[in-house]
Image 1 (spheres, rainbow, N blue to C red):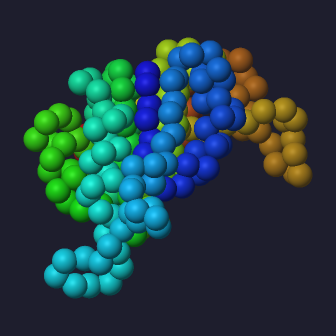
Image 2 (image 1 turned 135 degrees about the horizontal axis):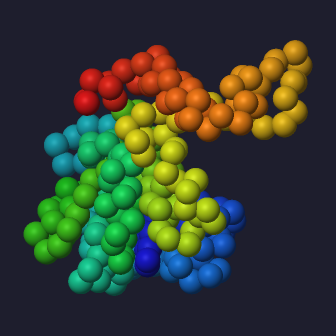
Length: 227
Ligand code: ADE
């Protein structure tokens, strides 16, 4: 998969060189390119923002640099992803959809967002999705893009060493994941649940399912209501 990221803070994405994503890049599974939006400005101050029409607080990102940048990095196959608190809420099912794509392009806005005509222009010519990380406001799209990239890339075959580890995790089965334990069997007076030491795989699976249900009931009853 090819991933292009356009941002005014390219160094934010230096962390994508480490861990499983870094390895996937080294092995050619992920072809990631980070671009500085200011490369597509033409004034001495490399201006990317201006005051909003209609008034109001904050600054809006100008359409011209975004137009030049996205014309340069988008391809026929690309999905343009625009992180925004006004977007659809990112989910595991959206991650699964995006993991099937050949090319993702992230347009990371700052300030009060990007001039709406940028989204309108590209939505008339290709696939564009506004994506929100959740019901809270970040300073810009960079952290959201990073979360989406990590959630999507670990679903690409070969990125996570053991594909079985993807199957039982939170949200894959519509429930939160059960709690996990490792050695030692006792730590600070706390025992590992004895069922996990029983060797009875059927009983262990049933216990884990119960734990998943209990956690989901406690923390995310909305997931059970969705049926
Ligand atoms: N930019 C600012 N807040 C955001 C959010 N919650 N999700 C995605 N992008 C954002």
